[in-house]
Length: 290
Ligand code: HIF
Image: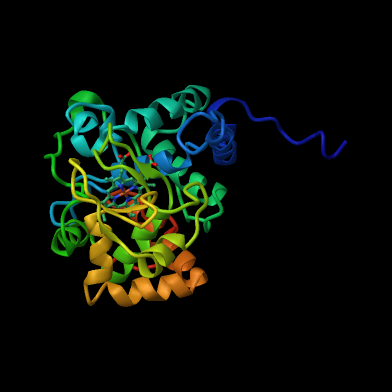
């Protein structure tokens, strides 16, 4: 009877949050609607995880995923966040089923899970974010997220403010191998690659090997290839035009393994910006914060 004799604890003492069950629930949602975009909610979940984290300002230690402030106005209505209600609403049943997880942990875990499920590297992730009550936080100023029609200086201003260096910026940008632009969200149109639901280094391959020219249209400045099917934002093109960014673009186009390793470290760091993890809790990211 030895094994059966194990004491059964009751109530909170025995409660162990099952993050793998949450991961599984997210995986089950990814291809639950074949009519949505390219057949996967993965890309928009990655964008949610990034936009909830990318508000961080290292100088004032404000913003970041902790708090899940995108649930509230004005952040939910920022132009940069257009379309992300799709991702937040998609995850709502998961939150209802696993109410012990915070929105901020759920949104970041969903992004990490999606990247991995789409064939990307494992993104180190740990729980510890809590959600602010609506009356309990100071709304962030708009303008912390990047604009696609701007230049390398803008990209550096935004990502240096979060604490990233040039190599990390380029690695992160490889996430644009996923998903597409929607004219009713950002005003831009089209995917960056022909495999927008598979995580790979194809973005860097397209950037370096394809030919890009300005799209002739009435919409915002963007670039397209000869087929007119693929696109690049101005900020994407600047990775190629900037002397310090370009060597990393070329490296990642040739070496997918290096890209996966550097991307996993940088994306994990992104998801942790500004999160007050308990002292002594193991760092998920292998790169030291610079
Ligand atoms: Fe994006 N990004 N991003 N992005 N992004 C869009 C879509 C996605 C920028 C602009 C846009 C990152 C950086 C930058 C994803 C992931 C990441 C869109 C289109 C725009 C305009 C939105 C729409 O119309 O639906 C800019 C200017 C960035 C700074 C260079 C990150 C590195 C690449 C941090 C990142 O991880 C993903 C995924 C999508 C696709 C979303 C979709 O719904 O398909």
